[in-house]
Length: 288
Image (cartoon, rainbow, N blue to C red; front, side, top):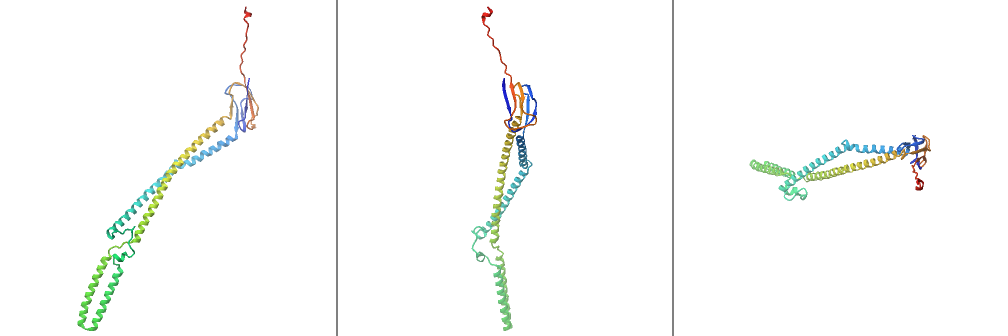
């Protein structure tokens, strides 16, 4: 006869006793135990699963993809802004190359470039005023002299006035040449540089978002894999709480229904009846 002692695998409560004492068959259920540690483990796994579901939800309902699409649209818009700013600066530089030669917005001319190449409006006004004053003084002097001198002075004044008008027209014509606005040019270049910085930052954010998306999905997959392993372990341990007979024999319970026992406590005894044979040797002389 083979004896088997059944002990508590953990701190458990005896939830069900199917057989108190008596013969049993192989595979028959004997005891059902309840482990509070396994119950806590099951609760933690359920919370872990809910936590994974909450983290995964934005990836499934399209919120994360919508943010990534918005970043990509921002990158495309900033790229167009940069292209427009570069085109505007290039057009301005080409204009300066045609009008000023080697000077560009990146290579500004000296500070006195306006006085070297253009006639400001203020000088025109001053010269006109001076010419008019000279004409008036001449006219006054002629009127004090004689009537004949007055006619001469009037002719002189007419010539002076005609010369002044011609000078003014020439000055105005020359002042119509647009002088380079270096302050405006620097603003164009500053806007271009700012747009490039914003474009680079947006492109970097979009690249990081794509990589973060891939990392987050990998972490979710890893968490799902861990969850599956823990669930399989829990299922195996919960199955071990149901004790069945591994062979045919006699069972005797050592605990009461509903009792709480510590790990290693004796729960029951199982005896296996081992069959035996009898060998008898009979001498041949008996049959003679």
